[in-house]
Structure formats: structure tokens, C-alpha cells
Image (cartoon, rainbow, N blue to C red; front, side, top):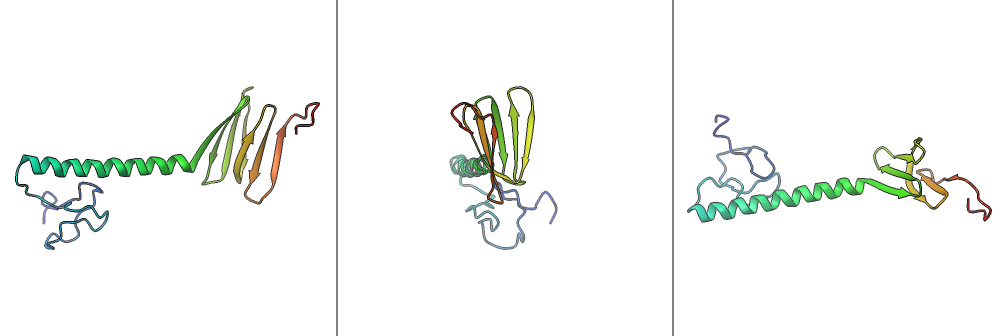
Amino acid sequence: MSAEQQLVCPVCGRPRADAALPELDCPACGFQNAYVRLFAGGKSRARWQSAVQAVRVAALRAKRLALATAHRFALGSGSAAFLQDAPQRLLIAHGDGRVQIEEQAVAYSSCENNYAVAYAGGTVRVFGVDDSLGQK
């Protein structure tokens, strides 16, 4: 079978393993009727294309959600922090231009003058200044 004749799933883009098989569903992504080649008319093709587009959009949203939960952004008073889950790294940009990198970090919290970093080993470090109320 030539490259032009090879059937490709319109959702996941994987080629069909065996074009001789009668199945129309994609075994890779599970999309029903992925390998349909002939349609009753323009209306049925439009419905099929709409279903393909809906699945693509849902997959893209799921991917974006996974990325959003894997990386967290936090704003503190005078700083901004970006926490990566893999590798466990916290990047803190301070208002005065300093950049601080904390390895093995799993959580970040900040208040007016201080911020705390929790590490994978269970330790917590508090950074900042101690004011007259002993906040730190």
C-alpha cells in the first residue's frame, strides 16, 4: 500500500495498522468511525468532521489542563514564583531583580515580608525579614 493510500486517523494521526481489517474505529485513540472513507453526502461528512474537531479540541484542552497543573505560578508581595513539578524546582523572581532557584521544592507560600518553601524531604525554610511582630 502506498503512502497516499495508507489510512491515517484524523484525530490522533496514527496510521492504520492493517488496511485489510474491516474495523473503522481507531485502536490507538478509540475514535469511532475514524477510518470511514465514503459518506452518504455532504451533510454526513460535515457531521463526521464536526465530531473529529470536537474530539481534537477536547484532547487539546485536556493537554493544556495537564500542563497548567504541572506548573504553578504564584504572586507574592514583591515576588513572583514559578513551581515546576518535574524537576522539582522553584524559580522566584524578586521585585529588586534578584532571581532565586530552589531545587527539590514542592510548595511555596508568601505573605507581606516573608515567604516559605517546602521541600521534597519534608523540610520548610522561611525567607525574608523578621519585623517587630516576629512574623518570620
